Image (cartoon, rainbow, N blue to C red; front, side, top):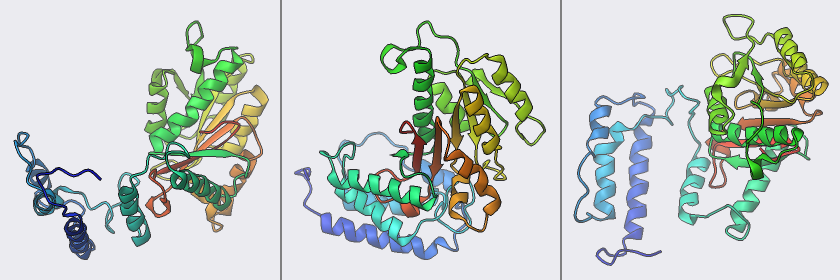
Length: 322
């Protein structure tokens, strides 16, 4: 580790200071409100010009704790129920610290044998936990948006192949718009991914039967039939973020197979039904899904399973890594 010559080697003191700050924070966490009084002012306290000289690691960390902690939302506390953010465990916290300590560039085996192996092991364990086919591939991503992005990139590539074009190599030039069909539960992260992939957020066709966003299956099938065999992408949601509702994945798998469409399943919430034997009513749809192709599914996990530098979302699919 290269250190500025102006400051001594205070690594041990820094580690001790951070550990002490963490203990003080955790001791108050159960009693603190989610948003501390004066949070905005605390967060704004660091608005200042770039200093001419640094103040050293210990003083900087002490300043962050003294003035900055009140500007942090207590996301790991017992009262935080927003934005899919839950509390961590001691093991996850420790692993997160060790991840920063090891500072791996885990894009390949050569760069980090440990990171590459832990990614493969984590995906294998998750497939076993959720009773997904061992033959499915997967990658760890940074979150739900990038899980959707990665899987929908696979769908985009498949769609191009159906038109005889390698989109990754040659782009979209000369191709028609991609038909994307969904219900009312489609999440903003999926729409964002669709936009970033150049598929066009406004091209998503929503088939909604009621004010809750329930999928109008008959209308969606009519749209597929009207494509006269042209390839399409169906976006299904397994576990809507507000109430946990599912699109009828088994029926959508039937339609995808019948009309030759790609079925993308956003399982950031509902994938956990595979690990909850007390929810047997939710499992048949997943059982149907796991025997069909082409299909991509994504699922996000919490920090408790983070064992490598990527910590949020696991993505599994058949035929293409999502």
